[in-house]
Image 1 (tube, rainbow, N blue to C red):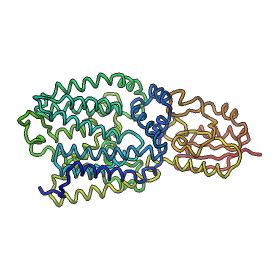
Image 2 (image 1 turned 90 degrees about the vertical axis):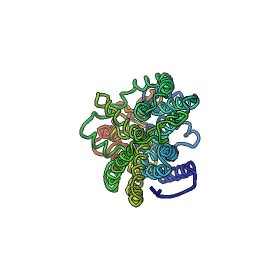
Image 3 (image 1 turned 135 degrees about the horizontal axis):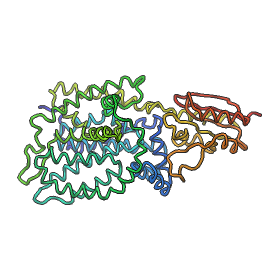
Image 4 (image 1 turned 45 degrees about the horizontal axis):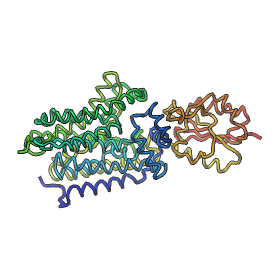
Amino acid sequence: MRPVLRTRLPLTTIALIFGIVVASLSLISSDVPDAWEDEAATLSAATRSWPELIHLLGNIDAVHGLYYALMKVWFGVVGTSVFTMRLPSAVAVGVGCALTMLLASRLGSKQVAVLTGVVYACLPRVAWAAVEGRPYAMVMVAAVGLTLLFVRALEQDHKSPSRVAWLWYGLAIVIAVLLNIYLAMIVVMHSVILAVACRSGRSRLLPWLITAGSAAVLLVPFALLVVGEAAQVHWIPELSVHTIRHIVLDTWFRAVWPIRGLAVVTLIAVPVGWVLLLIGVGSAFKSGDRPTSGSETDDSGTVRVYPGRALVLLAFGPMVLLLTATALGKPLFAPYYLTLSAPFVAILMAIGVAGLARRRRVVAVALVVAVAIPSLIAIRLPHSHHEIYWSDAAELVHEQRESSTGPDAIVFATVAQLPSATANLVEIAYPDAFEGMRDLAVTGSRRAEGRLFDRNGDLATLIPRRLASIDNVWIVGASGVDPRADEARRVLEANGFAVANSTDLGPVRVLELHRSH
């Protein structure tokens, strides 16, 4: 089989080039899409003092504790903005690309590795992770890095096994699970790989058990803390007919919500992605799924992994585990949790492309790139993240404040799709527009009380108490039905204010009120 391209460059150099290019491309317009609820959580958590952050994690979101700590340090160095929040994700996607290519080479060939770099860069789920101020891009790096260390530890001479290799693997388990507890599923898959994807894997079973068991003991306090906060994922639905749609559309091959306008074109990546993935699964098992060394062991007893079985387990195993837990009454399945499997999906797709005849191979690569372009563009449009219009609302308030005179204040009413918080999320994401404004409706302190977001008190009581010397008030809430915004407007009107402007920006409504003289 003749390769698509020939090069004498070592794979590590090629992987490094791919990683730099992918990271650089990921940064383009990464700050254009408005921040959304989950990213507001990142900004809220990572901009606190260390005692406040520790207090928060004792109440909620411990599952993201390490990520928040890393982002706090990062913000302390480069400052806080939507761009700096997303920059680590873009870099992580580039690192993930390079590591995924190295893993593809180890389990396949140099050609498969290069094709993996192309597929990985074009995968819609990867493109989504690159512009998310959340840990999912880092989770991909951890999943691939952990697997590389696992394969390396397996391939040590069984006559003199390297304790250092297993030590690094164990340390990686601890760090990975602290970054995101769902990465424990990758460790579980490693155990299954020992059982079914390495016919001589039993020789490594004891060191694996010692390593994974030691890591598990160290992680028990963290796991108990996360389980104690499990109520925070109450929003995950039980299995239904919609689950099939989520699996087919949302897991790896769609990146934009909702499907409107240009986003409709992005759907073409779904059938193309699944076809190539299924071809890759078939190709990976072709010829008896030979181990990476071409034999079960070599003269030194080095265990080799059967790549087809291993990759299928890593790609689909976490999905099976989450669906099983959900079916058993513990809803855990959400499509973007399976971002951790995206690198292994990319390798399988690359194996499928590599197995095609030369002309078909070229067509397949061109098709992968072509169908990815709409997603790569759409994910960077201003309102691609759940049709959020927070930056527009912040800009409008800023412009109206500049044209008004006198002291001003703000009432944050309801934010769409998150009734447990207030529209203060807009201020968390874009604070400059609201600098110096007092929140007339907030009660308590989210920092002191260990909460991510603000909450409102009794509006009829709080707002009149805080109106002294205030001439202008803005209400930011949800467009359409928003009882809190309506109540705030009535209270303000009863206290001598009148509505000057009402503007709907997607799901956000901004009301401008001035004191009547």
